[in-house]
Length: 310
Image: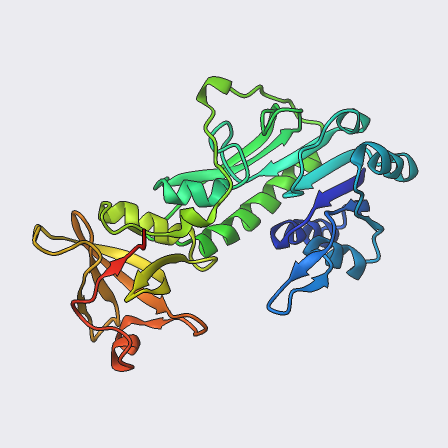
């Protein structure tokens, strides 16, 4: 079976590398245009393009799929297209040229859209999963080929969940390709939910919310890009939120650093309904450190308050 692979970021590159390692016949790759990346903002190839070039697979970055993309299909004659985080909606007539299947990081029809992993964590989901579906013109609305669910731990951060999606998603993709074609099942559109794109405003944590909600917000963006808040007008990032203590001291302002623990190094922060343990804090231009290290360095102390600027 001749495969056209479409994808762009590091996540998709892991899938492409997996297919090549498993000896699937990837005849061509389509990726988005190269963009400036890293601290120096140098123009670098997309991660998917890097993998394709490493293995000598023809890689293309068309501006117009309905012209250049159709020409690629005509020249390389793939039997199927596999799409992983390509980053653009696919339209007719390209959609009609070959069967195209997407690997989506949610249990569709829940969390359609661009940020399903982060939104599931942010909403406190304890079960999520991978869906392979046949692409249609609607946003993640196509018929389902295969799904696989897995559990999320109570304090599990995005970084760990991301790795699970690579592990279970690549396994599911291998199963799909080995058994292709498979029976398709229409989605129940009445149960659909949406996972909107992450905006900068989504990254600010509000300690006037319940402790569980604050923890989930921090987990969803740990280790990247990190949630933000302000300490004495300095924007800092927070990581490693887990343990919650009950606390009824209504006289303490939410966001207050109630204590910094010597044994664990955690900062214990007041929320509207409890105390949340947070392991790490990151100051501008610095590496993340434990709250205890920040205290020992004179950067933070008990009684300080995290606030978001209006």
